[in-house]
Amino acid sequence: GQNIDQPTEMTATEGAIVQINCTYQTSGFNGLFWYQQHAGEAPTFLSYNVLDGLEEKGRFSSFLSRSKGYSYLLLKELQMKDSASYLCAVSDSNYQLIWGAGTKLIIKP
Amino acid sequence: GAVVSQHPSWVICKSGTSVKIECRSLDFQATTMFWYRQFPKQSLMLMATSNEGSKATYEQGVEKDKFLINHASLTLSTLTVTSAHPEDSSFYICSAPDRDVNIQYFGAGTRLSVL
Image (cartoon, rainbow over all chains, first blue to last red):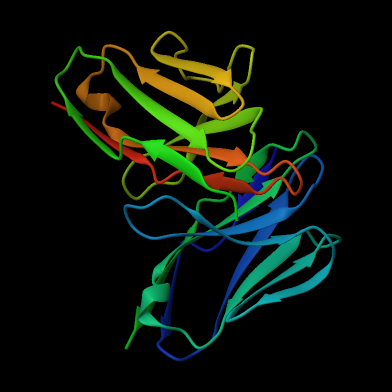
């Protein structure tokens, strides 16, 4: 079966760095996506990785290792507004997105 | 990024009535759109894949006669919740993939409350 695993909840301090991990087992791979979802709102796109390595976009970076079925989202210089759920999703061989359950990130002052 | 517009953002209706939700891709064409449902504190659940000019593909357990999907043009898909009941109260979200990179862009969502 297809499976995406990510931690349910994480807590970090304002100004610090946090890494949210995601492991996946899917039938085929056409890219991995990270989305941010604030409570009561729709997800917004953060990053897309299809090749191994690190993609950096401002305070957010996303890493992919296809051989290990592993990705992480790195958030630097955390701000209170970063408190949200972070969703990992993988595009399978049919280009259908398989979603993880999301990681709720709590930022404390 | 691409923009997906979803309307209405909030609906309150009586049990037994039907509710239509629209999803539009504003600056790109989408032959495929996706409809999700999300209950409080739960993950996104894909309901169906909307295909322009053909029938929608429903996920297992989703009643196609209850959740009617129409994808009449390359920029518009509609979801109609027929004979809504309180258990249908949820957050409904549509998305459309950018054709080049296959990134899914989401509408703002529709919060449905059935009394």
